[in-house]
Image (spheres, rainbow, N blue to C red):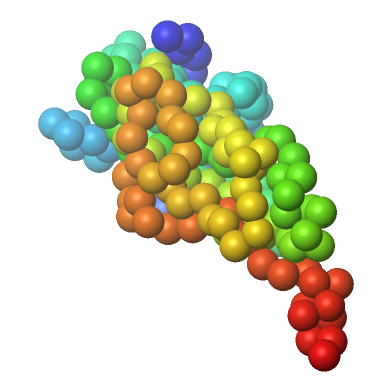
Length: 194
């Protein structure tokens, strides 16, 4: 389990004016929360945070957050961004137990070539681009592959059909479509001819 250490300061003053001052100095206002932990306002260095979540795991990175000597194992759960600049304005860090499942969102990547669909002039329509899963933090995949090789015209791949790594289960409705097929323009034109 690769964990990244991030240092935080617990002496940040609250309020929008103080938050603006923090951001101007390169510090992001944040809060630590979780089971058995009272919400704790902190400040983290913007550059350090960017490098902590810039790896393959992204926001699913397990972080050792050192808040003035007290260490919490956290994941960045909600990031608020400035509406114009897109810079990080606030972060919510959730304390997690590395041995218990957590909710995570993982991107879906289509792989393979649906030859039968293509030859029938049908099209493939990806409906779901991210999947909510339950998994231990160390088992969260960077992405999940959805193999479309065996699709035929009229087929669909639902969440329940996606092959997930061991220890990973879908968190939402398993009947939601991930990939659908539908007649392309050429196939519709051919069907319309008498």
